[in-house]
Amino acid sequence: MPHLTVLEGEDRFYFKLAFCSFFLIILMVASLHFGAEIYTPYEVWNAFWELETEASIIIQTLRVPRMVLAPVTGMALALSGLLLQTVSGNPLASPAFLGVNSGAAFFVLLAFSFFGFTSLWFLSLIAFAGALTAISLVFLLAFSFGASFQQSTLLLAGITLSSFLSSAITILLATNETTLEALLFWLSGSFANRDMSGLIIVVPVLFFSIIVTLIMKSSLDSLLMDDESAKALGLSIFKLRLFFIFLSALLASLAVVLAGPVAFIGLVAPHIAKNYAGLSHLRNIPFCLLFGAHLTLMADIATRILLSPSEAPLSAVLAFIGVPFLVFLLLSKKRGVVG
Amino acid sequence: MDTKKAPLTRYEKVNLSYGSTIVFEALNLTLNEGEITMFCGPNGCGKSTALKALRRLLKVRSGIIFHGANPIDDLSDKALAKLMSLLTQKPSAPDDLTVEQLIKMGRFAHLGYLGHFSKKDKEKVAEALSLCHLQNLVHETIGNLSGGQLQRVWLAMIIAQDSPTILLDEPTNHLDITHQIETLELIKKLNEKGRTIIVVMHDLNMAARYADRMILFKDGKVAADGTPEEVMQPSNIRNVFNIDCEIMRDNIYQKPMLIPYKLRPYNDSGNLNG
Image (tube, rainbow over the protein chains, first blue to last red):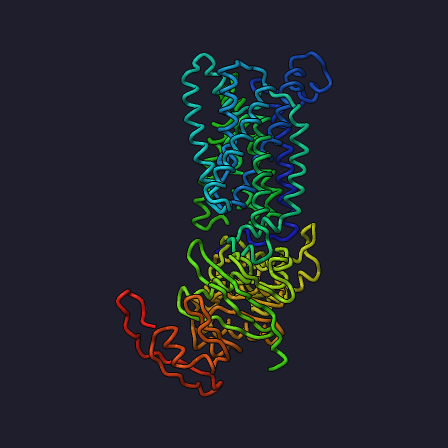
């Protein structure tokens, strides 16, 4: 049976890496061109040197931030998902399972309903606080369930809290008819009208996380094994799990600051990366980051085109692209075509 | 033979339990350096528990386990991994891992802060590969291996860990007779290269063939302890396993061999008569 993931030659790895990086650049450039208004490369080029024309305003103030925010968010969520899948030994794990999205959404809804906050920057902060609160609660629950973070306890705690918060969100939404549309839009995540100030925090944290995970690749690899075997190899698995889960939670919460709750990237991107580059973390982390960026950029471009001139909700578009892809991947793997 | 007898591991009044189930109370046991010691006994007698406690996968309730000069609790996870490796009873890893990736994991405790493989790490991996005859399977994914091949891969991982003491929890379980012999011959070879080896074994005849020392456990106590000749006595077997048997010698190695005859009757409470 042919195996594409069987150890690649170094050349092949770097070729793939170069190819995927190049594709990222193409997508970033494309995201400047497409939207409610479609520009030619010539117009885009000029827009950078002009002031006060329609094209220059749209491109400089609306599309450049999205071109940067989308890939950074995608990378943070993808890495967050990969860490969580490895550490929990559960291929279905994603940041949403830690309660990140529902926590953020719940807090934002509360702020919206009772105080009427509308500043996007302030909502981002509220969302971050909500994500962190939810994660802390999940940790507390997990500790009281079993304390060892083995396989299922953390996910069980996460799913419990997420479902609780989701129903609370539904109830809050029902009492909030006036602002419903704006809220629903925020709840599905978006890069529209976001400013880039959040990047000052997110980019350094993301950079630090990438370096640390690449250095600790062997720990991550060995965590794929059963607990006893991993311990016998000398891993302090409790400490390592705690550290990687914390890192994963931090990345996911920061992604919420940039774009609101975005689903599916953290689930799908790691799977594509593992199928494409194998299970070695040194190999699949770079691809995981790149695929996260690709998917988010593609989805962001699609949100602008699909319902033009209005915007389609990001999470819905992501699910629309991501889920069929994931199904295809899993089916073809089962038949031995991929992996 | 006498030069091998330096004590290496010491259980001192060790109490072990799973939750509220007590497995050992005040276990005292000394294991020697350079020997192949086999832990035998019926299911649930605590042989695996004693092994796991030595590798600190299970915390002792009270008492101390010494390995070399130090109590094992004084050592860091990595330091302990450099002294002792353990192949668990049912090791598991994702099917998509390659043979090489898995064996490389054995080097974890030796890697530097940046997690890179040194020349020595690569040599040890290559050595383990050739010792276990896996050179042709290096790039194969472990999901495609047969049971015997897979067991060789796990053994190679433990060998790559390059620790002076190797612990094995039922390494021949579920293997056919060919692969059982293959595994035990490999263990013997490692012992001849100076490794101290402690094995949990179900098969008494195989244990008697390869062990320097056999220890029979029953109900959290050492029921018999000594050379295979000393331990493999009908009285010991009757006491521990509750069967009548005959002990013979094989023609080539002159090691004791057990022929089981029949089970002794159960008593009223559903337990076997001791």
